[in-house]
Image 1 (cartoon, rainbow, N blue to C red):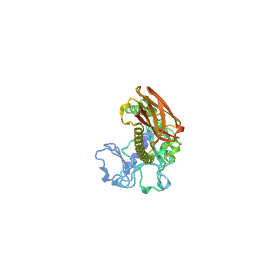
Image 2 (tube, one colour):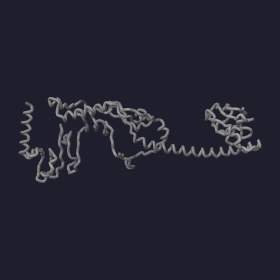
Image 3 (cartoon, helix red, strand yellow):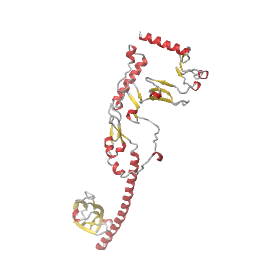
Image 4 (spheres, rainbow, N blue to C red):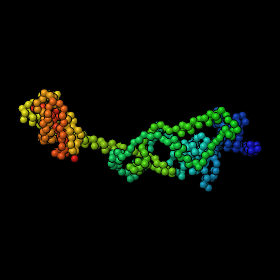
Length: 392
């Protein structure tokens, strides 16, 4: 009965519309034409690609076309609620998808299956509940857009407080923004009174697979934890109406740039100190060789003691005690470990026994904080030399 009534109403509408030339159904093709048809726009679709053609109020220019969906009203009375149309009143050829309170993109016949949305009640933000692929993204950054510009300080120290993590998104994340207030499931099969057409069955299977894919844990991702970032860079964390947090990762780029510059300055200072220390060490080693040549009458460059050597002290650096391990060949008669400061002055000597491996304990309380050189001298010849650092 309802179907018959609907058919009668539709037929009456078409008849009335045809009479006033506002709605027309082309008998040969079944194309529906809505709006004022003029000689200039009759032949605008020579390939007969359209099933419906809506003409605007400006005749052959076909501009200003708007089709209302639902509770459309006049603009002066606060209307223009929901409609599709051409952007502007000239021939812009731009789609105007308008919702007075926002726009939602959904899939699968359910209002809570949201791909992306813009809702004025959620702020001036477009939300995407999916990954977004693009060949490039450019953000407004002109100096003329900005005020109160200040340098970022202590960037490196702040970055060290962040924790990079790997993670999987929870299965429900893509449906986390259900703002629609209910489900509008389109059950085509039930409406058709059976299993539906082959296309409907394929669509149903496709949607079922999409839902299954969505319910699975996604691929491994890398990122930060918003709650942790908020403690360090609160200006880079945003909160939506549901109190979920979002990180402005792009906003971290200038911080990393300043952090790299600070790190580069530290490296340059350290390199300068290393060069200075190497120069001082070379001077100390030269003084050591001169001291031993002068006091022992031997040539320190003679490789006779190559079978005796030192190990690196452990721990190094040290602040209390450290152990120097050595190896002295069995044919050596005398062996001594000497410690020199950076001015080349010998400040400690430790006679050691030959014939194998041994250790000497160095008490840090007997020395000042700084870098030292220690060597192993066997039978009046320097066998090995190393460096150690005392910190207090």
